Image (cartoon, rainbow, N blue to C red; front, side, top):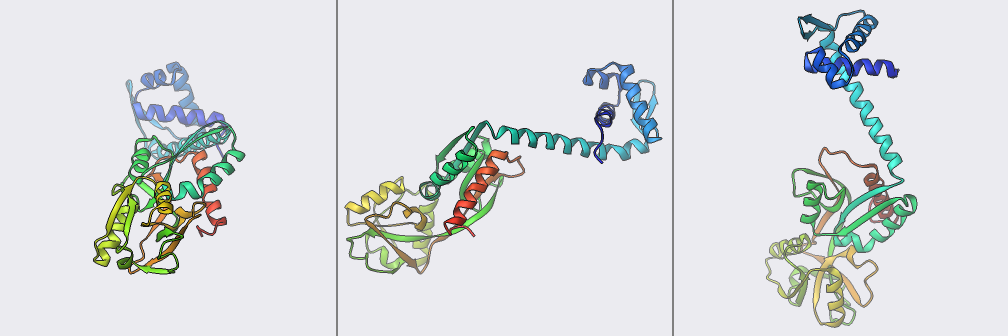
Length: 303
């Protein structure tokens, strides 16, 4: 049974005295008179049938009964405070702000649907959804500038933790008129014979591509580096270049280009939700995460 308001007040008074080891200081902290505090503690002791404090002049110390009660009282009040915060956040889903950082791959393909579903369910929440590089997402989460991230696993920062959404493969991409467009599979050693347009080295996608080149013991012909997938796709439609991109990145943007599976090796990585380790997860962020998972499952991406 949950304690009544009367009992909760007694527990708060008890913990204040236990922490400060002084009735007058505890009364001052609680904004009550010292006689009132002493009366409340005596009522609690009478209810329990045991003394909780040894009084030596103005100083007090916990008895064995007081020492046994203290961790339970702390736990009860901590759980109550957590419940009140949770209920407050549920009410807060009617208003507030949510800040999310998303990698390019997921942003273009599914974020519009996620945001549409989330805002329809929670129209009072102002959503800021930024397409960011992985290091910017992770630093934003650690600093508190972001509430939720969608990035790559495992996170690079020890202060973060992740929940896997799906594993994605990187593919070769060329224009529909390119000589390689009819190929269904390419080895990494073959794609490097073509002049390439790739994401800049600061992006995790590029770093994964470079590791694939190293594993295949080949040196690529990188003719152009760009900072966005959209720019790369626009370039491929007009120039006889090839690229390597996440397969999901072509979602809704595959007109005029052709994806080709890569082997030996097949670059792949895990995509997931990123949270600050051990930190409270706002209800709005969890609701957005649930919408993300649901839509990816509907698309057959996450399982």
